[in-house]
Length: 86
Image (tube, rainbow, N blue to C red):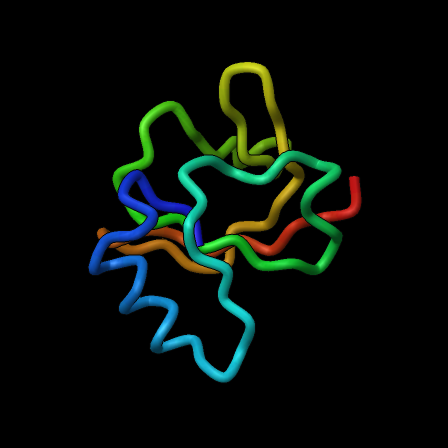
């Protein structure tokens, strides 16, 4: 779970609702390619400045980084992605 306020209420509540799945909270940035494996899920709670999704190349992008990912769901509160293998 990636959030601008990683230890805040919204991140904690999201983790609670994801139980019994392993929801790792406390991240304020998107994981880099070496930190996330293909098939992992990344939940980004809005707003997260500096991170965007490129639909053409299907990747999360930020200054100095890129993570191949498929957008599965988007809402005002955030978006859910599945990490790709490329």
